[in-house]
Image 1 (tube, one colour):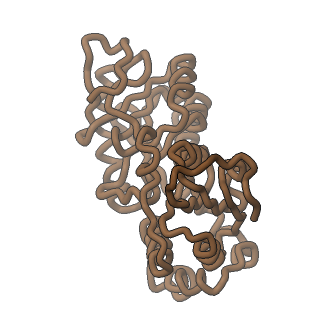
Image 2 (cartoon, rainbow, N blue to C red):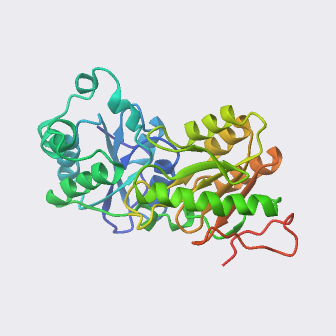
Image 3 (cartoon, rainbow, N blue to C red):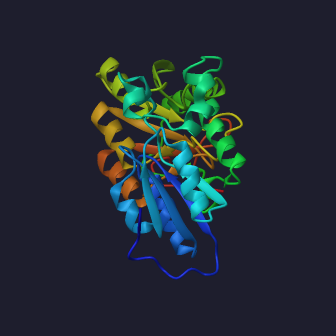
Amino acid sequence: MAAASNARPRLHRPTIGLVAGWGGFPLAVAAALRREGYGVCGLLIKDHADQSLAGLCDDFAWIRLGQLGRAIRFFNRHGVREATMAGKIHKVRLYQPWVWYKYFPDWRTLRTFWPHFVARRSDRLDNTLLGAVVTAFAEAGIRLVPATNYAPELLVKLGQLTRRGPSATQRQDIQFGWRLAKELGRLDIGQSVAVKDRAPLAVEAIEGTDQCIRRAGSLCPAGGFTVVKVAKPRQDMRYDVPTIGLGTLQTMADAGAKLLAVEAGGTIFIDQPQCLEFADRKGLIVVAVDSAGESPRGENDEGRMTNVE
């Protein structure tokens, strides 16, 4: 644990706890908290969180996945009563050999996850496991809230985001993929699908969106397919909110995907200006669609339509 050297004066606002996983989302949340004058107390998950997060925190500690008890004690010691989770947890690592040795769990972790990993009385779906984390923090007097409460500008708005828009065939694929992805979300399996000509190429499960896209590319070497990523029905915005960024678009370009459709108001878009510049340069299409899987149609689909209300 150490104090960040560049902590800014607080505007009489409380310290917010940040549980940080992989990706750029935790960095964006920490920066937003500091802009608004909050103190930032970070729990940075080893083998996941970006090391530069330490410089955005007033206090921080590195923890392993199996140290839920230590996480709670750290927040309590620093007077944290409200916290948020941001960033991906690579769930596939829980199925590696010697996982219990590598992530040796403390007592609080064992008590919380015993029904899921030892007694096998409950499932290991994302909502189940993350919900157990929320409950454990709540029992310790720490309320977990959506990260988008602090950075609402990261939620993508309805509209065509790139210069190029979808063709009529691609619009059909968006609607088809929307229905598939929503059903996956309802079952708490995944949030993304890859489709072409209204045929499913790949669906996301534990491996994550990037691997889903790569698999679609290997199965459709001709390329030109559509990726649809949506929030789950009754999405709990405190965790597992669909997130895209430059890595997603780079994976699409490498795999031969052509279009990315995400759910407006329910998807976090990291570094949007830089990502859209990359997408335009690579000839990718990015749209944010509504609750029916529809994107607004302008007079000319080749013209960029951003932030359509």
